[in-house]
Image (tube, rainbow, N blue to C red; front, side, top):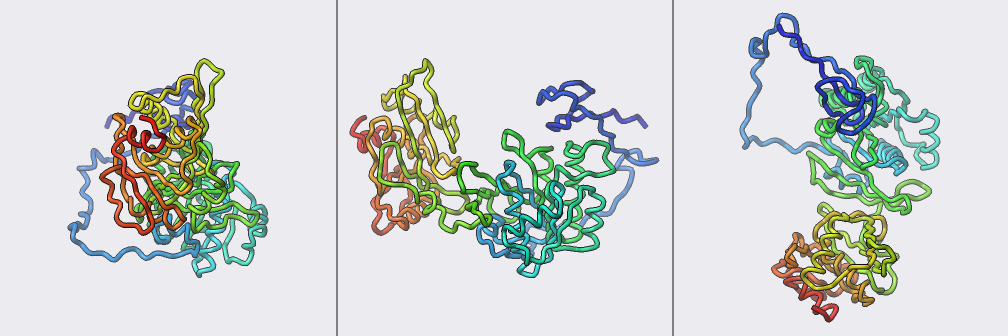
Length: 455
C-alpha cells in the first residue's frame, strides 16, 4: 500500500499546507507550521469498501419523535437564547472578548441549574479552585451545590466526568485543555480539535450537556479551527463594550432553537443581572430630542428591541473626511452617504461623520438604514426629529425604501414605550396599532422632502 503523504497545518489559523514552511501564507505567522500524523487505514485494509460494516437504520421524513426535553435554569435571558432551556447531551460553545464576563456568566448559570436539582460540574483550566471560589463568594453563590475542579489534562477530566456523571459540565476553557495523545502544545489547532472532539463525543455518549468556553481572536472570531463550531450544537457569543455595563448573549448557531436570539444582561457589582426590557434600558438615558438622534425599531432574533442611533456631522479640517462608526457596519454608512449624495443631492464632502449606537448595542440589521440616514440628516441640518418617532427600513442603491419583516412587532414595542408615530417603507404590513400613526415612504427622496423640507 502506498505511504500516506505528510500533512502540515498552521497552529495559529488552521490553514493546510502541502509542505513545511517557516511562515504561514494564510495568516503570516512565523514558526507555526506543524506536521500532523496521517490517518491509518489499519493493517491489511485496502479500502473502506473492502470491509463490510453494519447497515444503519433508516427512517423517513414523516417519522414522529417527541421534542427533546429541556432543563430551565430560571435565568430567563439565558433560557431564551438556548431556545427554551438546556437540551440533554448537547454541546455548546461560548465565545467572547477577554474580561467580558464569560466565566461570571457560566458560574451563575451553573449555580442556577444546580439549584433546580441538576448535577453540575465546573472545570477551570485557567484559574485555581480558590480563585473560582472567591468569585462565587463575591457573587453570593457559595450555597449552590456545584462541583468544582481545576485541571487541564483531558484524560483526567474525562475520567472524572465518567465517574461523577453530571448532567451539565462546564469547561473553561477549551484552549487550555491538553491531550497526551496529540503531540503539540495546548491551544494549538490540533489540541483544540482533539479536545473538542473527545468532549462532544462524551456528551453524546453519556447524555451529559457540555458547555465549552472559547477564546476569540482580535477579529472577534473564536480562536482555533472552524471545525469546532461545526462539532457543537450551539454557538453563543458574549458581546459588549468595555465602557458600558450592558452585555449581549447572542446565539449565532442553534440546532435546538432560533439563531440570532439575544439575551441582555447588565454587569453589576454582584455579577450579571438580567434585563427583561432591553428597549427601555437602551433608551433610559435618552433625554430631550436633539439633532443627530433617531430611534430605530429593530428585531434581534424573535425579540423587538428599540435602540438610539446617534450621529454627529462636523466640518473636517482634514483633506480626507473621517467616517467613524461604533456599533454598526462601516460599509453600510458609506453606502448610505453615497445614496444621499447621488439620489438626494445632499453633499457630504468636507464633512466628518461620526455614528454610534447608544448603550453599547451592535446592530447588523439592514432595516436600520432609514434610522441611520435620519440621524445623519438631522445632525447635518441641525434639525431634531420628533421625540415620539421611530424609524425602520432598508435603503436600496436606487434610493428606494424596501420593506422589512415583523413590522407589527416593531410597532407594538414602540407603542408600549410611548412612541406615537413611525416612518416605514411603503408596502409594509403595518396592521392596526391603536394610538400609532404610521407614515409609509416609497423612497429616500420623499422621506427627506417631508421630514426635512428638502428634496
